[in-house]
Each structure stands twice: as C-alpha cells, then as structure tokens.
Image 1 (cartoon, rainbow, N blue to C red):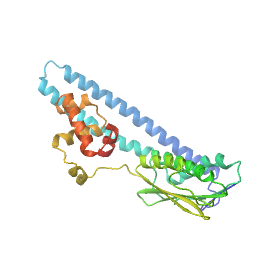
Image 2: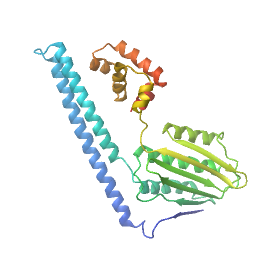
Image 3: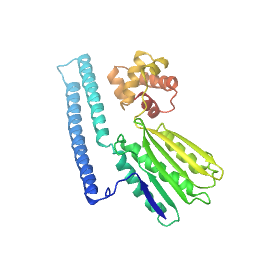
Image 4: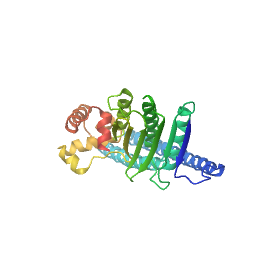
Length: 288
C-alpha cells in the first residue's frame, strides 16, 4: 500500500503547520461559542419583550400585535445576519479539508495493496462551507470503497479542484472499467450528491478503468426573483413563504401576519403545489 500526493512543497507537514491549524480551529471555535452565547441572550431579551408587550394592560390588542410583529421581524433579520456569520466561522479552508480527507482514507487502504494518489486543490482556493467539506469527504470515502470493490483495482487517484462556485472531485481507478450508475454503492453516492444539489457522473472504459466526477455547489441554492415570479405567488403567499424559509411554524406565521392557523395551512399547501415541493423542509430550502 502506498499513499502519496502531488503539488505539495516539502515541509508542509511540519509540527509548526499543524500547531497553527489547531490554533486557528480553537480561535474559530471560541468565536462561534461567543456568537451563540450572544445570540441566546439577544433572543431571550426579544422573547421577554414580546411577553411584556402582549401582557401590557395599557396597549390595545391591535397595537400589541403590530409591536409584536415588528419585534419578531427584527429578530428574524438579526438571526439571518448571525446565521451568515456563523457560516463564515464554520467554513474550512479547502487545503485543510483535503488534508483531513487524506487522514480519513489512510485507514481504508493501510492493509491493502492499493496505491492512492492525491492531486491537491490550489491552496488559495475558496473555503468550503462546513457541511460541504464534511459531505465531500464522505462521498470520496464511499467512492473509493465502490471502486476497490471491483476486481483488479490496484491504483486510485483522488483529485479536488474548485472553480470558485463548486468543489470539483474526480476519483479514478485502473480497474476493469465496468462501473456504472446502477451499482448500489454508486446509487447511494448519487443520493448524497443530489441532496447537496450537486451532480455525479460515471465514465467507464473497458480495460482502462472507471472515473467518478462530482460537482458540489459551495452556495446553497436560491430561488431567483424570476423563478419566484414563475411560481405565480400572491403577495400573501410570498409573505408566508419568507416566514417558512426562516423556520417559523404555523402559529408564529399566523401571529406575524394576523391570520388564522388554518389560513396558514391553506397557503402552505398551495405553496407546496405551486413550487413543486413535497415537504415543508424542501419548500424552505427552495425559498432560501
């Protein structure tokens, strides 16, 4: 068994580099912990304020609802801003993510006669969102297992690249070249890739090996204004959709828009039909 990499300068595995990486991770973790603590305090204050407004005997029901709606809307805007910041803190430099992949694969091939070649991504490539980095490593591990299940596979090459918008992964073997998308392990990989709105292609040439090409978007899919227009949503439906995307439940949506919960359920059912989503989570993902 041999594991080797290309495009790496000597000395990059020095203890100083590892220590720097660890220090960076600790700093990011500390910043994220502070962020979560601040967010908890801010939302506790918001909830206390909402309760105070709703319990106030000197405020009319109409005024209380209006104030509560304003407070809730402001809190959701703040939550989205914090969510963006949290995402930035959980991003992983692409070179660091690839290094972790090397460590993940080492136990899989340690006791076999398999040569694994790593083609590293550019060190200045765009950082990967945490969930993309995690899933990418899992997908590569699964792909390597799928390839070595074939008879006669002695070498595997793993390559990562980034075009600024997508993580591009290629895994190639020197096997019989008969891998296809109907193989159960490949179908499982395809399901993981699709869950990230990515694509997976299998190319095989008899006697020359098989290659899996995966593209994973680094940004969550968004519904463009033009796409939303094609859904034919009414102003009220758009309002409901925004709140669904924020994670609000039916009761909260009803209170925010001053409508009944049954009306909210009606709008959500219409949105699922118009957008073509099968679940509320899918609807929220499409709206973000």
